[in-house]
Length: 266
Ligand SMILES: Nc1ncnc2c1ncn2[C@@H]1O[C@H](COP(=O)(O)OP(=O)(O)OP(=O)(O)O)[C@@H](O)[C@H]1O
Image (cartoon, rainbow, N blue to C red):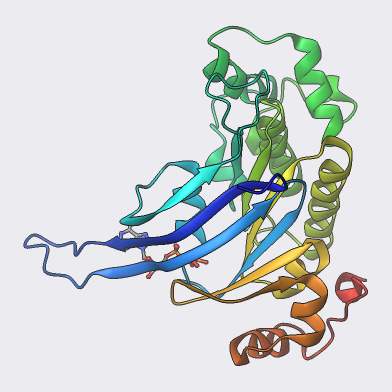
């Protein structure tokens, strides 16, 4: 694996077997021979319509699903946060209300991933730092709150604080802004960019919204029916895409308003 590479995916396929009592529902080939490299420190946008296999790809990287065939290799990171030298990969989901326990305070929610990872309590200062980094300040006013008392954007910030407290090498953000108002969504994208710059975190940004992908990504992979149909730098995908499907996503998303100058959200 090249030094610049954090994760290398080779010929990865995932077939979901038929469900139903007799397992006679048709098989679904959710991922079809996908090869892709995630580079250290980049934001890699994964875009495609519903059902194109984006979430399945994320779940395979996270180890939540087993591939039908193919291989995922991880760079040897040798940091202190893992025993096996593999990069720490965390996830942020679409619906922060669903992914956060309603019975836990913000302090407990942010501490939990560290307790699971290390089996011991977390320094309060670490929780405070994580909340500060995601802009939930003054921290004291958030520590004892429950998720239902927070706005959607604040809940997503708690979800991000939960991810960063484990000092991840990479975060898979699966449609993290699709349930938020546009301006709050841009704040979350800017927060992710900030974390990339300041903490060196690599992001895989899964979205059906090519405008959001264009705003934040260094490179973009376009998925259709389980395959990557086009891959390139943000500039190549926005200004010089080759595939008809990418062109149709660009047109339908913005009526042609996306440019290579990050202007889609301005
Ligand atoms: N556990 C499962 N069992 C059977 N089929 C599944 C399962 N998970 C996903 N699929 C199917 O695999 C295909 C890809 O799904 P996936 O969720 O990866 O797509 P997606 O691009 O993330 O879509 P969305 O944006 O709607 O989440 C779809 O046809 C979906 O119905």
